[in-house]
Length: 151
Length: 151
Image (cartoon, rainbow over all chains, first blue to last red; front, side, top):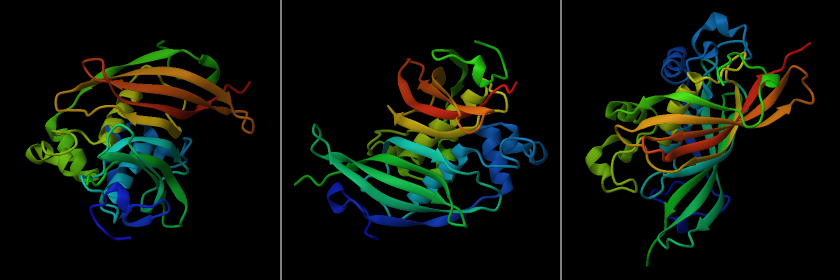
């Protein structure tokens, strides 16, 4: 689908959207980690070899932030913007490495008009982040606040 | 608690840990947003007034990244580092604004030795991010991979 400025009523369960792609560099991994997740396996190539990750890996929160950028730039553009109430069932399936090229698969999995607020509702969006091999690296269900058309 | 290098066996359900604090600046909000969440309510003070957030607000993923830094720097230091398998029930309760001072409340809520891997298990950690008024801004349950003492 490619319409822009979606209201709740414009969406159906099962609708899918695609995204562009992002290639992850070593300097991005280390820059994010030094600001937000300063652990050796995100900062130091040599030390990382001796850790759980067996080599430098992006912070999971960095992967989530990159997925957000891909989502903002994707075809899925709600009226009023992407407003997250929360996220369920977030899983980091495998490490993201230097040079990985990430893309999203986006699917509407639930639509719930608000009982108390007639002008909004919650859309549940399954966001799956894949690497260049088509392997899942991160998936979650986002609960987004969508506007309703008030007529 | 203040021991460092925790193994699974060192923890009990109900154990709590505190963190330092982080004060959020306008330039940090805009810098993160321009990289990862380029939406008007995270980038432009004037435009933000007319949006859902009624003023500039940090990206929810920025708040999550700051919470990660506070967690890494907290008293809770697992042997081998903080390795996240995933996150459940993440909620952004209210916006984070310029000047907000964030801190964490960290609590062990479940401990599950792995059935297949005798040297590890999953510890479920409830992470609550509070602002300077003691209001919740972000909460989630992190599923962390912890080492077991192999004897």
